[in-house]
Image (cartoon, rainbow, N blue to C red; front, side):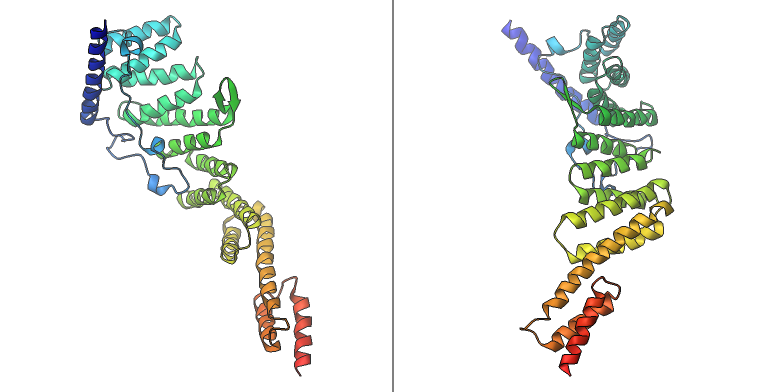
Length: 348
């Protein structure tokens, strides 16, 4: 008995080696390869995205250990695929899913493999409603069988599933939880696999919002900036302009004062006023006024630093005059003018 099991383990290992070699020679072996032979990924063009291996370096399935228990029930891919159809027709969907997966693992380059992978994903959506695994299965179909499947249609299904995952959350021990990071990465994987899809701008808005939910506003800004650059003159870009303004202002409020950050925010908001949707202009102007007030307050404190017993009157006068030149409309302007007149009068 032990000898038989050992032989089967050796066969599994041999199948794994054969699978790897076959994949290297397969025309569909390049993950994400498009119909014209170009990679569909553009990870270096998407700042703010994760570059996790799962996002950009998918792994090929291998035959499982102890495959005499978990492996295919037939001797070749053709018979295995027919057996899977019998299971589906009989309503045994859970077992059919396992056997479809076993077909893909053991005969990855067989003509039936991509069809089995696609059917596996469809079963996981309905009736099994295992949306997390279905997302992974459709992603695998795009990664390794992009030449055989209807790439656009499958990419659309992937995006639809990302939306379901966003609503459904993640199940742990039969309890549903929100899982912002996993959902955000799912959207990123959609964009990376179909950067030209019509839903990409909307997906990028979602990714940026999820970055904010994670407490990573600086990454959200990168996504909004990239969206504006890739899809200018669209409603999505105008939405990104306003949302980026909100995020930048939030960062300015939440962190200790930083002059360069404040000035950068002011410069962005001035640009935003020229490109935003008209209905957002008033809110952005209010943000701009607040940011300018912050930098003026800091300049006022810096000017007052020179108005002390340890400093000369000339130093204080110079500091206040520079302040009025730079911030004539500041809330502190009248106070500074009065103090400046007092200093100059005393100087005389």
